Figure 1 (cartoon, one colour):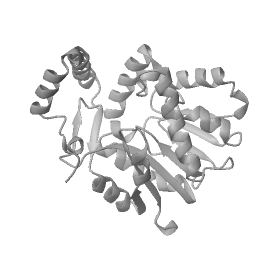
Figure 2: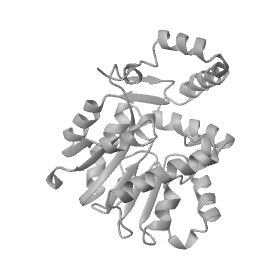
Figure 3: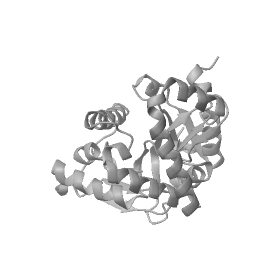
Figure 4: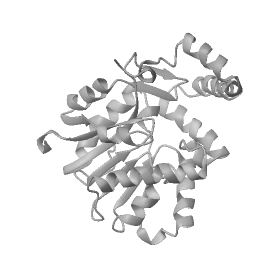
Length: 260
């Protein structure tokens, strides 16, 4: 039997009513988000443009909260968690990393400090959060590490060279992405992934119906994402050791099929 929280459909009216009864103090925040969703959804029919506007709104309030960290301490802890996991899985200073959705470098600044100079490449759809990323570089004194930060309008990755990156990383990106954006990424990431390299991504997992909340939070069944990766000639596996981390999302690792 699935865990109750993994069967929950957060988009259902029943769940929303029960949530409102249990957490009345959170309802003003939810209603503000719902109003913003309606307004931005009306102005931006394309999801990337919509979510770029969401990030602009959130970053103006707090770059840390914009990337899902309720406090500076949590921002540091989540970045450390991502860094430790990849180092435990063999990340070396000579690796060449692409971070999709690098945000304000919550984990990125640690990767930049650890990797050889010039070996980190971060991309994001939000110019506002990339400006915050530059401030993180300055605050951490990492200018000499020659990190690359680039603004993108999609996830075709067509401006990047083939076979370049030994590690591709996307944390809390697919949890905010509809199926077509995930499909676009998986259709193209294999081209930039070096032989023997891997692509790790987190996602909000459900074992019930797949659903979304306010066009910001998307919940997927694991088998859906595994099958999507395999459709693009990639091998994907659920990373069960990540489940032991104090983090609400799950993780999948993708490699070239020949690497298995």
